[in-house]
Amino acid sequence: MSDSPAARTPYEVLGVDPAAGDDELKRAYRRLLRQTHPDTGGDAALFVQLQHAWERVGTPEDRAAYDRGQGARTMAPGGYGSGEAHAAGASGSASTPGGGFQSGFRTGRAASSSVRARSYGHPGGQEREHYLTLLREWVGRGASIPDPYDPALVRSAPREIRGWLAKAIAEEATAGIVGTLGIGYTIWNNVLTGRTAGGVAETIDHVVLGPAGLFAIQSEDWGGEVRLHKGEIVGDGVHRDEEPLHELSRGARSLGRSLGVKFTNLVVVVPDAALAEPMHVVQRGRLAGAIVVRRSLLPQLLRNGVGTADRASIDRAFELRPRLQSGIRLA
Image (tube, rainbow, N blue to C red; front, side, top):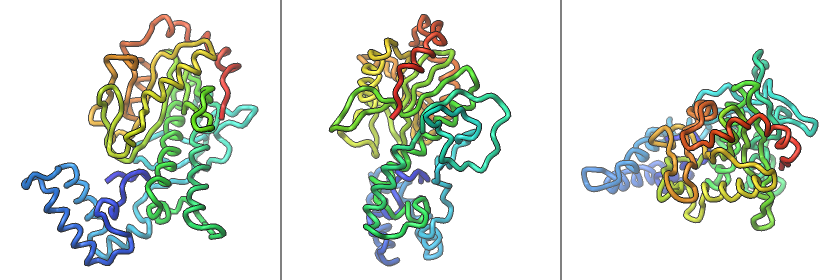
């Protein structure tokens, strides 16, 4: 079972309230075991999820440890809960006159001695603010929250609240990865597209400029596996009305028109465990060339590009930096 805040908790997998008694928990497990067992025509993926859930809360001792938040990775700013290795965080990254993304992060690491990529904006900042707002509303007005990132508290929150924290962590992880690629790269985080939806300004998580071109990147973590279906991302945690690639495409077109540039590729980055194959590329239609990639493969993608890239735009990549720097607006 994923450690992502967006992933279903063992109680959600078992379909019981976290306050349910041990006997109720056991009855739910046995009922679902019969329903999902592959030998009786059940769903093998759900059967595996059920086993992992039971491993965490199946005994009073394991359940008590889980409820206390033991075994969870840090979710505080600067921490990465995905379980993947990143030379991440704001430590050593470039700051800007308006405040770079190194402010407000506690990484517990010394700054890298190597020259890092230029980085502007605050990855995950808006998402963390939204998470904190929703968390306070859920806990109740006037209630004290000593640590809003306490694993036990996070696990007890509704999934729609936890999803905002997972999104923030995903954005921070991508920014950290790009930061390690060196001075040849520039990343702008939380870039305004010029579009609004429901009165809210739309953003692209990251605009990355490097030797392989100009990339519009969204960092996502839906808490489970995703795949491409008819040119769009689908999965258990992706809402049926959500169109991640189409939304990114619309935002990139709007931003590209305002800046007078064309993006080399549209990229959605997901945790490694969320994608069965290292990378999927949309082959046909208006989104042809759009990419869904495992997080660990992002450096390779940003260094080498893909076959669908416009080589002429790659040759001009570094000429674009002054135009982007003067034209991009951060949320």
